[in-house]
Length: 96
Length: 414
Image (tube, rainbow over all chains, first blue to last red; front, side, top):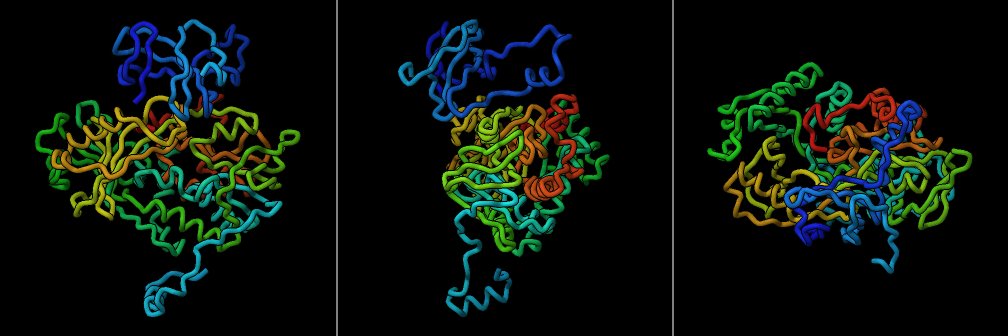
């Protein structure tokens, strides 16, 4: 079972949360300049890394707010929580 | 290859079982192959088998990081069915069921395919409407299915709870569906491929690719470099990892899908049941274990183990259908890493690299597709042109919009 620290409510069990997938995906634009290939890339293609994944989570059965976490997809370790509007942190062996 | 038969069994009985030979060799890799298949699961091994048998291409290696059949092929719940919604899926999966029907004979290896029937149970009004729609779609696609009301469902499955929290309103039965011995599917294909000259190389991890001017030249492995004219990926949940090494991305997210078995008991359940209200399904193996599972753990994972909340939800769904199972003990619980596509339809065909082919995106339903997946993938590799059954399962569809949305169409969870 994951324990995730909501930046607003503190540590809670994973059943209170919902994973919103990869974070920091930018919508391409303006629309008239976006090719089908680029649009498809934006909608469907994902990094899906084996290792550190930067992802959005929603504290659905809590404060109802979104935030970001950096999580290891092999160990499931939550390495860092950070606000929804922040850039992805640099994760090194030290910061872990 | 020594053929298995009742006579050979009898003869070896008299011979103190000393005449059996290894089912496949354990060769060192050669420096060059016509085709290198990455991934020694069901799909990779079936592809090698059909390349050799149907297309006469025998200078083939199957590279497996661990042991053959140790990934999702050995981790699924062995259900075989073709109750899909769209014509493209129905034609493909029904072809797979047909290949399964003759597979024990074809491979001279008992895969224990038991067509015990596959039930989908509707538990609310909307589920009922979905089920009627599915029944009509299957009829139109030429896949036989029977729609039964509650009385008939209960007559056929007497073990069902009389007063479940989610009522049993109706059931849709595909009587040709069922289960098979999953390991035997991998082993049977491995034995057949090896017999035709394919090298199955275990404990050999692919660490990179040799690509020049957008053309594949070979693979780098833990056992050295291997040249190859063509390279085929059949690595399920690790497809994104391999694609990254080759320099492209895919519309895949990898999740952990759990399954569990109970302690073995005497035969109590002679069919496969999927409860639409709770999203759980159950069957009983020939060993007597209840085999059951539910949905995925809903965050990306490569961990090959699931977490407790999903397992608890699954167990609760099973106990709602069969309260008498509530005191049975879990024997084992595990997870496989499934490669989920946005539209729950696989990608089989060409990759952005010339000479490199993709077989991925089966999500939670790859086992049932093994024979047809291998057959069509082998054709695609040999002819450098997609087999017509998998032509719609191309990567281009994410750009053209020709998605085959089985997640919405058949309510299929993967």
